[in-house]
Length: 86
Image 1 (tube, rainbow, N blue to C red):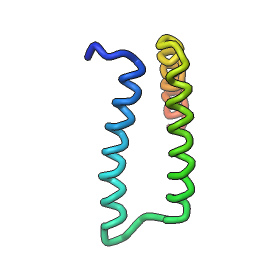
Image 2 (image 1 turned 45 degrees about the vertical axis):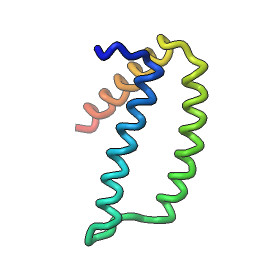
Image 3 (image 1 turned 180 degrees about the horizontal axis):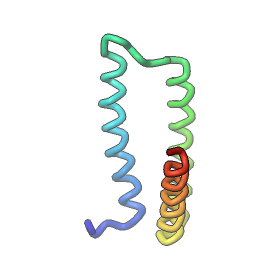
């Protein structure tokens, strides 16, 4: 649709999701209720950083078709699980 390869789409989507997540996190940190559990946030942030580097490395090694099939399978599984919860 946008004439973008899978590897570029993956990186671009991570930037978009990251910026949106940061905006939401700031609201939760600065809001009146302050709904942030800092110890858990730090642990998951550190794990997420390592996971992002590992995922980026693995993404660079895989052919585009494998990434597309894997993502499609993941979306299908998540969709089925969401439907089963209702």
